[in-house]
Length: 244
Image 1 (tube, rainbow, N blue to C red):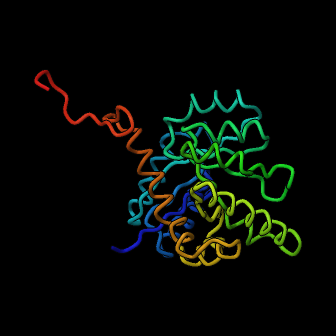
Image 2 (tube, one colour; image 1 turned 90 degrees about the vertical axis):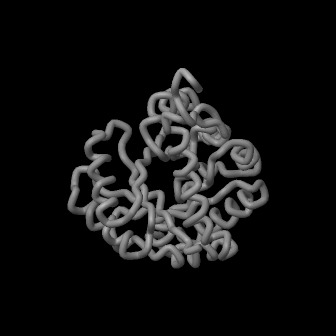
Image 3 (cartoon, rainbow, N blue to C red; image 1 turned 180 degrees about the horizontal axis):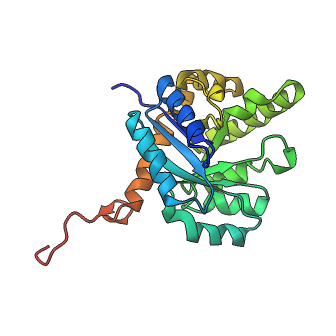
C-alpha cells in the first residue's frame, strides 16, 4: 500500500487567504495527503471551512488545530474543557513543568510542544515521558526551528532533540515530525523531513512513521471521538431507533 504523509503544523496567516493558498498548494505539490493548520482559539468557523474547502479542491484532507499556551495547570484544564471539541488536533506549548506534566497525562492533549532554545523550558524528561506513555500525547518536533537556526543555536537544539527523542523511544511515546512552516519555502518533501530527523538519531523507518502513520492516526482517532456516533473508546453507535 502506498504510504500517505501528513504535516500537522502549517502556520498560514488566518487573515491572508492568498498566502494560505500558496502554502497549501506547495504542500500538495510536495506529496502530502493531509495537512493541519494552527488557528487561534477564537477563529471564525467559516474561515476554518474555507481552508477545508481549499484543501479539498487540491485533493488534500485538512484538519483544524489549536495550540494552547496556558500559564498554569488550572488554565490548561479550563482551555481544554472549552476548546477540545472545536478542533481536531490540540497541541500544548509547555512553558512550565506543571503545565507539561498536566498536558502529558491528559488524554485530551494530542501534541506536546516545547520552546525551542531555552534549556530551562525543555521539560521532556523520563517523568514526563512516563506520563505521556500512559495517555495519548505525542512529542512534536517542528523542523522549521532547525532550518532557521544557525551555528551554536542549531547545535544546541540538535542536542535537545537527540536527548528527548531517545527518552520518547525508551517510554514508547510517539513522535510527530512537522514542518511548522509559515511560508512555502520552509516546506520540505515528507521523505526529506524523515532524513532530517535522522540528524537527531531517529531511525529512518521510525522517522517515516513520524510524518505518516503517527500523525494520521491522531487525526483518525480524534475524528472518531468527535463523531456523533462515538460513545466511548471502542464503542460506537451503529443505529438509532425504537427497535434497536
